[in-house]
Image 1 (tube, rainbow over the protein chains, first blue to last red):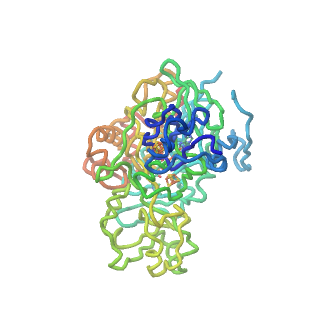
Image 2 (image 1 turned 90 degrees about the horizontal axis):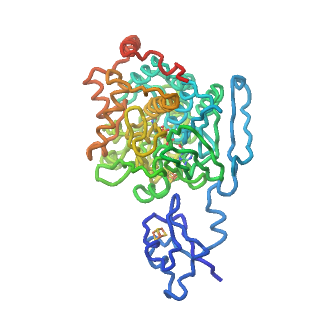
Length: 106
Length: 429
Ligand SMILES: Cc1cc2nc3c(=O)[nH]c(=O)nc-3n(C[C@H](O)[C@H](O)[C@H](O)COP(=O)(O)OP(=O)(O)OC[C@H]3O[C@@H](n4cnc5c(N)ncnc54)[C@H](O)[C@@H]3O)c2cc1C
Ligand code: SF4
Ligand code: SF4
């Protein structure tokens, strides 16, 4: 059972889907458009075919697949922590020490 | 609490900005970089000191901001050699340079954050209060420098290039570049190709040296350069027009495959299909190491160029934002990124200290380039041009204005006369 549509990294930021969506579930994010899976009703009661899928010129709007969502996000989004290097005068000739800090003001 | 400088983007420009912010007396300097390494597009490339870059490099050394040039010199595989259209070039070793720069910055007290991709910004009353990373961390600061470059992301490489070809920027893994200037809502400019479409394709690839015939490899390591003539049916003179680096649009580059020894073999073309490359004598088994799909294309650059003044302060409604490197306009190259990064980092600290910024006069080629490129970018023609100390229109201008020289004493004199000797070594707070 599909619960929502999603937009893959194929998205070319044209915005066609945002204008077409009957429930305003689509918005621009940092690098592409995204669908709010709480708002998305898969166009049930509005259109026979999901409107974003119909509108998208590059077939980026597809039924949500969890495996895609988990794998497509970049490292930091998967929980990779910043690796912080601190130096000072003693660093010369020593192996660089990297450590991962705790979250600062999450 | 000590005031904090946050530099976003750890390419050559960001590394120079962070270092020079420390040298100018800022106690707390954080350099944010989205990948596992510093240097961005500087992890490929490697050509320094060629043509007018020699002048700019020596000017910056005389002004006290030349540390990173000296790090490059110490990690050069070849110095003072020529290749078509270029004199007195050095080539740094692309494998050794990153750890050397990282160590140098750490020694000077810069705090480096890798795996730290900036994605959101917190603006209060016309100032940036903090940036957020993709990981959710909030990094507060008093002044910010945007040195996120102009390479990628997938949308640019797909729309205006030949798709993501898996270059060293590694967008699919680390997430694409995000412009800080763009995020605060300042309208940016985009460079154009001669046909008017956006961006420009990067101009060189890397081949694995181990895959070249032994005699080519030997000559490459001994002299720094090899020219392999192309058979007539493969010569495509049109393709040179799409390159980011106009200085390489010479017939030697259309008729030969030119290789430079930067540790790997730097191939002086935006791309060439592997099956064609493999038809050349000695390159029968050649393999790409950057971009991995160099067989079809290269990374796209030069959108999201920030409006800025000659002090590298970003123009618009934010009062604590500076920039440097490719972000600051169509000034292309490692040398160009370092000198504008120095200026941006230093002037960011001056702003913190309540002091007037340094604006370099046009008697210094760096000062002339910074203001000339800003003016040119106001024009449609300028947006289609790439500027570099090393060739093409800007090198011509340097020669016309008598700015180009390799005479170190004359350069030191020029800098002294402008009252700028060692300025970037002076603490301002
Ligand atoms: C293939 C190739 C070969 C080249 N060869 C040469 C050469 O031989 N000689 C020469 O002088 N020039 C060469 N150039 C040009 C030169 O590399 C660039 O003009 C110059 O290095 C740009 O430096 P920069 O610091 O402005 O930008 P970049 O090198 O693009 O650095 C920007 C940095 O910011 C980081 N960043 C981006 N977004 C974020 C974010 N949201 N959060 C955190 N970090 C972020 C990136 O990961 C990157 O490390 C070459 C370029 C390419 C692509
Ligand atoms: S229609 Fe498709 S390509 Fe256009 S914004 Fe929506 S998802 Fe992206
Ligand atoms: S080619 Fe490079 S810059 Fe372009 S999308 Fe791929 S990794 Fe990013």
